[in-house]
Image (cartoon, rainbow, N blue to C red; front, side, top):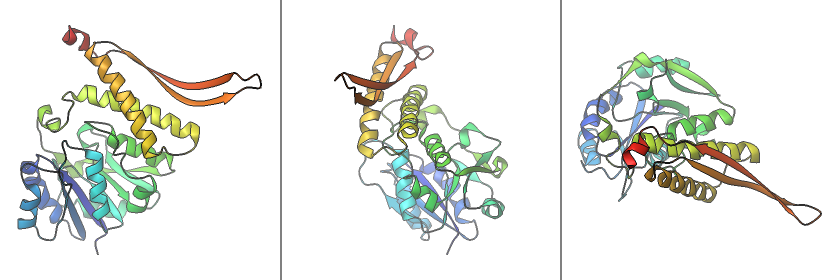
Length: 275
């Protein structure tokens, strides 16, 4: 049985997977799961034909790519105690598994260091810790923040952030258009900013309430914030987001309400574009 399982997702990235998967398969003592997220390039069939030992998970018909849900599907199929989430455009060194294996200890999760923005999604975490925080928040849509949100919740649960050398991996260069090809929102800055507002509100509610939010609570919060931010963007304006937190009735019968308020300025260049 392997001790590390590589989990990679693919939608429209088969050309990248054809370069990165052989390296993953060649790592001794490991296993691999590929999530074919309704990939138009038939990534799942290509993997099954050439790499029979790799487990393929298919999402079924999906209108858009959902990174968080895709990674969760991969984690559900993994059998190893350590999960390594690696994007299809990440090229790991041939000695990656052998180099990180001595570093892995319970109580920590591991990111590349020094930090590189294009390696944010590369993470190693124990499957028990992954499950204890509910995995990635699959309420989130579009590009950006689903990985940073996951890491923050791991920290909030008491885990320490460990690291492995970023020199153990490199990234396939590609344009922004490929990053957003299968998302509804085609601007990475807008998508990540909207998701940031949602994450900050969710984190504050979690800390104030002392519990994680249920899926229906997160869904309502996400839809409200996304609607407000996208509407403000269309007008080239900033936005104030008010999130109700609690209410209490006083002895006089008056209701004291408590809300969290977030002020988001207009994205640079948006007003000019809207005009």
